[in-house]
Amino acid sequence: MDKLLDSSVEKMLPLKEKDKPVVQKLLSSGCCARCVLRFCCVLVQSLYRQPVQDTLKQLQDFVSDLDSKTPNESTAVPEPHPASGDKSHDATEAKQGEDESEEGTRTATEQSDDPPKKRMKLDDGLKGSEASAGSGDAEAPPAPALSHCVVCLGVLQEYCSRDHARKVAEAVKTEDYHFETILLSVSLPAQLCVREHSCWLHVKKEMREKVMTRVKDDIVPLKEAFKWSVQGLIATELGGVSVVTRSAFEVGMEFKHSPTDSDCHFLATTCPDCFRPTKNKDSVFTRAAVIKALEKIPDSKFLIHYPTPPGRPTSICTSQAIQCLHTSIYVAGRYNKYSRSLSQTPWIIDGRRMMESSVEELIAEPLASSFRSKGFNFSSSGREDVDVRTLGKGRPFAMEMLNPHRYRFTKMEMKKIQETINTSSDKIAVRDLQIVTRECMGHMKEGEEEKTKSYTALVWTQKPIEKDDIIFLDDIKELTLDQKTPLRVLHRRALAVRQRVIHSMNASFRDPHHFYLRLKTQAGTYIKEFVHGDFGRTKPNLCQLLKMDTDILELDVESVDVDWPPTIPE
Image 1 (cartoon, rainbow, N blue to C red):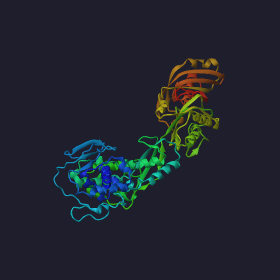
Image 2 (cartoon, rainbow, N blue to C red; image 1 turned 45 degrees about the vertical axis):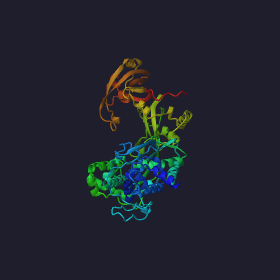
Image 3 (tube, rainbow, N blue to C red; image 1 turned 180 degrees about the vertical axis):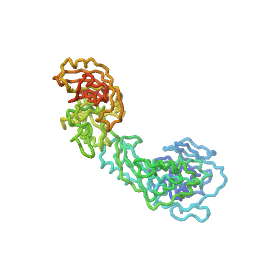
Image 4 (cartoon, rainbow, N blue to C red; image 1 turned 135 degrees about the vertical axis):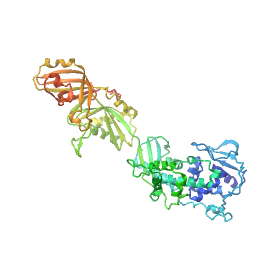
């Protein structure tokens, strides 16, 4: 019975006879059991999920009989790596059987024709005692089970436990997000790439003639091995939620190891073009830059600057605070602005608030409260001045809710949020409030120059007028204006002459010095400047048409002709 159990345990490791020197070399160098599996290109995820002590025991048992097996004995063959295929098997291996294991491995019979070679002997020392003195080429015994891994610096040893998974789950629960699936993201110290490269060269150098038909890209990435080890535990602690490769909700784990930060520094000298200062980065030694440098540096130069195998650490990586992030949710609608003393966005000059509130803030506050978002970005189809009202069906707008803790709302719940906004102030009102996709946001900006807008302006005339003096304005169609950037916006817009079209006008007499002018124009037309001429910067203008000075007293936006967002029936 014991023999059957031992045989079952060995079959769990998808390794073969010629992997033994590699396994022994890695263990003796101070690699943890899971990193050994990575270097041996083991893709059986269940092996990464089992306790690391159990895997270490299996590996020790696997290499302990290095001399006891004959070349004809059966061993397990590793599953090929999807990136480059399995190049590690000799062409003389004979296939035996067609049954594949659950994880995609298969057994094979290896018939070795290789010439005799020296083999390193390990007796019971693999479990803690010294190696047999019978061979001068014998390796030092592998590191004790509790020693810190020279490659992952403890990430695959200390942070793949149920206790750590429970801490991650508790951090997620504390944030109180709503989610259905999660995506695990892992940030590792850049120097782990250097240590992995060093260990790879160590194995490659020592075992080249026998097993190094593999390439470095065949190594299972550390991030993948970590996720395989821990994601099931985290999912269980979160009540069985699915851990997927694409999700709106991301749980980020970051690890650091300050004592070995300098491991990367020699690369800045050997490959200086790989390290450029970048915005929002505290260090030039980013993971991407280090990987690029390692791909570029020759093995011989690397070996001059860095030891192989890497030095044994005295501490493990530290886990930073768990970061939760939900992708943005987009809310669209239309707003009316009834006040002539309300800016569209916060008006702040030199840190001083010029207006008590703004359209943006009056809409955003109830939304941010309902979605429990960390912030927002407001955008709209054009903008109106502080003293301009927006009437009719309103102006289309969209709000990006950043990192919302809640993301799903029914139509009735959205209607209640709309009512909350409308009852919170008499200065604005919103309609057609709805959740939209990011892709739909583009509809608001489509045809920015081609869409039309309708206005009503109250015009003052210097000279007294009669109804017949302004009736000719009704006959003017498709009037093209040359508008130089207005003086009032020159501080924030580039100086240029822009052509805009007034499609039609309609004048309504009020009294000898006032009349209403209704206009339908191309989007982007400066209405105020058309009325008063802006010191001749807009041509033609109403002053020229009436042959007298005119000015604008009030302006209302009557319609913004954009068919978005969809109308919601009352």
